[in-house]
Amino acid sequence: MELYEFRDLFSNLTNFKKNEFHPMVWINGEPEIGNNVFISGFSLINAKGARVSIGDNCDIAAFVSINCADSHKRCIDLSEEIERKDIIIKENVFIGSHCFIGGGTYISHHSVIAAGTIVKNLKIPPYSLVVGNPVTIKEGYYQDKLRKKMDNKIIPYKKPTLGKEEIAAIRAIQSGWLAQEIEVENFENEFCDFLGLSHGYAVAISSGRGKPAERRSLSTNTIL
Image (cartoon, rainbow, N blue to C red; front, side, top):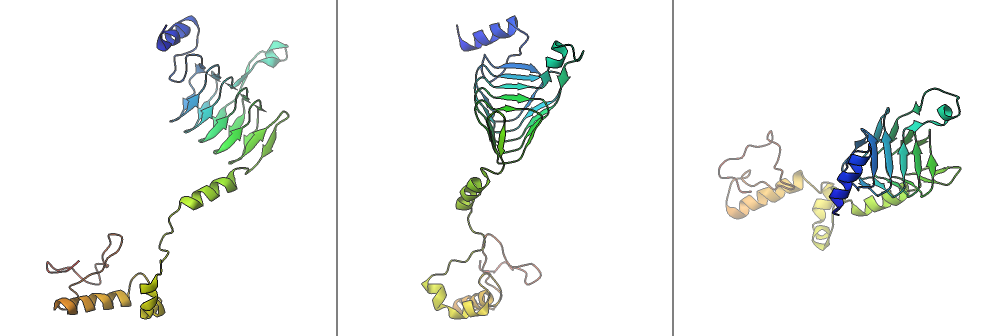
């Protein structure tokens, strides 16, 4: 039997809807599931009667229960109703296998819920590692690690690179202007002199930008 045939058969024999994740992922109600979300088999998402939201780029392992409903009070005659509370899981959250995420839970972005952890009626801060029963929240556990990773990827903006030629051009460094203004204008004028043009017909540009329009207008003879 093909995988999609099994999925259809399972859906027809139960009240769980067909889903894009796995034929043995059981989805009840209408959860909000973002983009690039992975859910392994034998996991349950119950959004019947409350809001369950899972953000982009989340990874939910096998045998995870994300359940907005709690019926234990009704079962032992303490209540006539099933208690239902919202569950919000923000983007880039990993939930390990055999976890239980109960109603009233808010998990902030870039957090990890370790395998076997029970989380209910808690607000988890960003970048946290959540472990154990009873639960322990290691707030900000991943923040420095992620910051260092991002710092290594960032290209410094407007940070000058000074080599031998720049150091030799001491007048540019002494002027205090490394990106624009007087020394650039001097260069433009010297370039015009070299070509036998009037000053103002050469414009030095960087990053695709020319000089502000109020300083000069470009004629058809301008050298770029």
